[in-house]
Length: 419
Image (cartoon, rainbow, N blue to C red; front, top):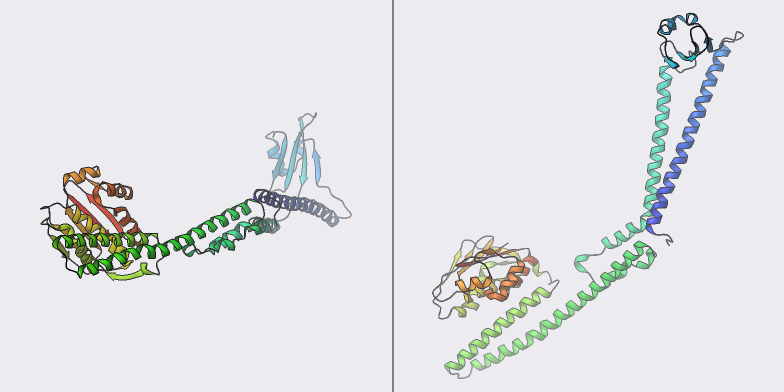
């Protein structure tokens, strides 16, 4: 469709626009000159016709300043320099030239009375000229718009096609909507081809992600379900105290594995059937997390103090919130040593705050005595004793529009979720 590149088309468009305007302005100036010339000649002929049969001339030469018209004699006595002078009031134009006469100069007087237009006619001519200039300006502006619009039409077409694609819900076939072949072999065609290939790769990635999460959800949860069922059958038999401890450890490990699987699957999903807009209560999920992780406090003599200042309900993914709270509660329970309680959990209208005391050894492993941790610091701290999911908690909160912060000093750790 387009044999020339976009750069050449724009350059040619500018050149054509300038050329057309230059020709238009040239014709306009030429017409103005011819019109002025004809107008002056007509005025002179009209004046001569009015004085017929006595023909008068507008040009007169004076060798003696004393013979000049009375209105010019006083001026001539000032010995003006050579040149051309205009006297608007007297309607005279005077040329002073050097001669060999006793005065050394001569005067040529051109009487323009009756030839120059009156002031009212001057304004009329000014209006005509202004109208012509304005019309040419408007025509030039319109011509420039038309030329530029045609030059960048492929860019606008590609932008419209890309704007019509829903980036929040990309499908595997969205790349076919661009049809890069219709944009030719220039820069726009190359850009369209690149976008088409990129969308194709993104579509394939989204399809693989959906297939993986659907398959992983089934394949990973099935062994957990089998293990849970086997534990329930074992509980119905006569077990010794040692066997019950082992089964309890297996049950807790299975629960932790189930939570971890759900956490990673929750992060892996691009969409989750609108659950990110679900409204739920905060308090039940916090209580559930405390009950699930309370075994970590066995033998530590550590109390858990829960302060309810409000009963908030928030919008988001309830499973994501439960995973985040479970992780924070588990970290607090694990890293609180015996006798270092209490662990405080504060629930406000727009905030959940979990604080606990830690030993100096844990803080030193984190690498500082006091800090507000970023995402990178959270990920680093996860491997240094603060638990697996602080970085994951940060990502879960970002996906749901919540705010997560983590603060540690020499004796306390505070994790806060704001919504």
